[in-house]
Image (tube, rainbow, N blue to C red):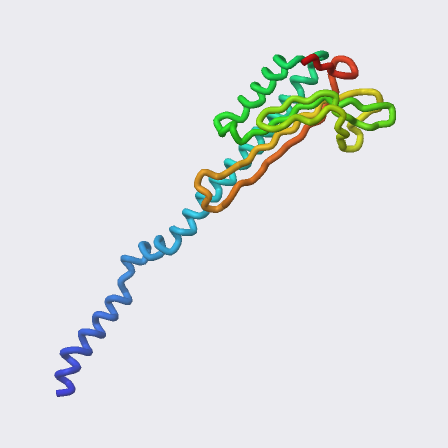
Length: 188
């Protein structure tokens, strides 16, 4: 009876377990199922970070171009500054420009090395008040001269938000000396 029970149940079960253990046809599917979440996370994370780096580079380029276009002028008015702000905004495209804030200021440095805002224009943000003291990096200000200060910041919100959650504020600031003369005058 014991032999018959063994031949009926145990031997087939042992043969099945040996065949099952030797069969590796489904191994790649199991490995893929284990690795897939990691690959998806990696792909989405790289995509979000790449977009943030691209926006930061565009922001830096726009800040430089904005300051450079104004620094080439000897005198500016509201219409010229609006055109220059439009050009800086166009650099950010195809990313949403509603998240872009710009402040462009002419700063005068007095004979004591104190820098104060002479004029300011802004987009999606308030401009700096005339006479506001501005801190500058060492070596930028020369007494009795002026310079252009371009400030841009951008709030980046990833489209998927899988790896980078929430918003990141990217900003850039450029200081440029006028190319023609010591100061850039502004006529409203």
